[in-house]
Length: 167
Image 1 (cartoon, rainbow, N blue to C red):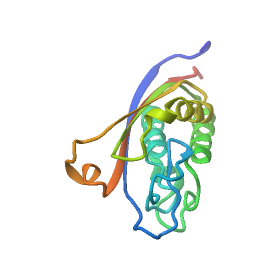
Image 2: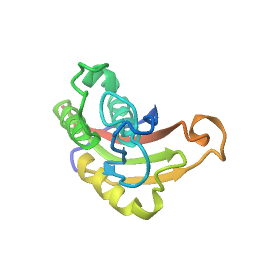
Image 3: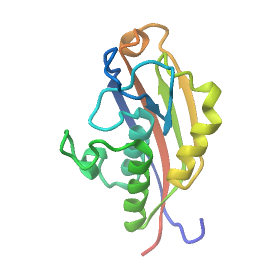
Image 4: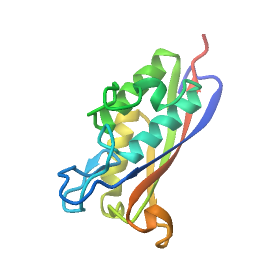
């Protein structure tokens, strides 16, 4: 990362409810479509909690607001109908336009499904390509506690390290 000065870390969080049975929503998490894992996630976009938490972590580290600041909120927002990876790519372009370069990131998916472990390398590769730096992906459950443990929804927490190019 030649030419990078000050480094900042940021954190992001996202949570969504699973769509009701029969909704036809596709399940997208960590930039991947998860067929055969049940209904998708409710939201104006694809509801990819891992991508959304990572967007917030990147924007937080860059001191450029949050996902709502960049994409807006609601069914008529710029993020409505979008998938997580193109949103991440747009976020990184926004950071770079402000002299900020992603350096490293991690995401923890919290929920009973999908089972991340079998596709962890694929998820890490997809997110890393979109962000332009290494992204690690881990997962956990809450031992049947709360909305993620009951299967009502899914959440993610992300951290990102960014560097600022001297001006």
